Image 1 (cartoon, one colour):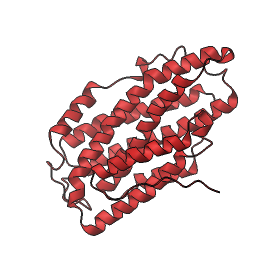
Image 2 (spheres, helix red, strand yellow):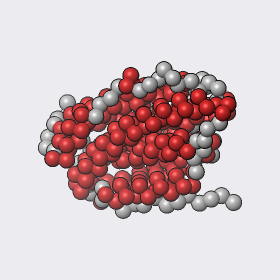
Image 3 (spheres, helix red, strand yellow):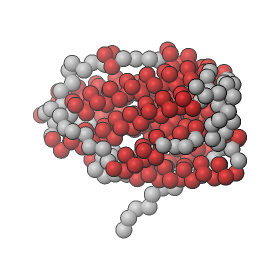
Image 4 (cartoon, helix red, strand yellow):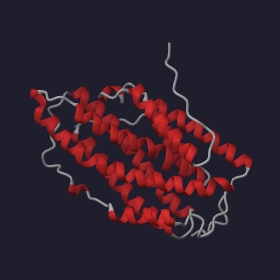
Length: 277
């Protein structure tokens, strides 16, 4: 157990992250728990959908599954780094959330009947964040950047599936997929909203404690990790392959991430990726 005094980067006390907003997040986290069994899995059969679509979808969900596995690891690591109190209470519920998310995406990937292939670029980013040396870097990389992208992807998935037209040959499969997405993605997004809020709350308390050199290192991490995230969102084999507009999605993500980066007091802003050619 740590009392926060020995952590690199910032000096934490047991009350460092306490406050009404954190108490409210703990209440919401306890109230909004849900189970995989609450979803209707019995009618979901997408085996009739074309194999190229199922493979691309399995790959896309595999990236999210790996992200949730990393988030589970990060939540447990943060529990070790942060002091006793409401922060630990919240992270205990986040650990439960992330374990449920991992199980959800494992089950979804199996539905498509294809092995989900995780991109090396995703593995690189997740490993970097997992190994973050300070609590503020771990909070920024996981709770704000990666969870922020996951939140946006969950909402985009709802829009995408709702917009899918009925194809007589695949009508039952598409209808079942729409039902699963409509039931699950808002719940996943609600979980991620709490995790992001916890990250914003914590970083607003921690970043003002940093000296100039520590703040500069954090700004550099934002720029590097943000660039890697946006490259993955623009991956045509994943985002475009399942019907999403990569450029439009990237633009919305940049706007959302820059807003949150500014909310925690950092100066770095992510820029749109330039088109090649």
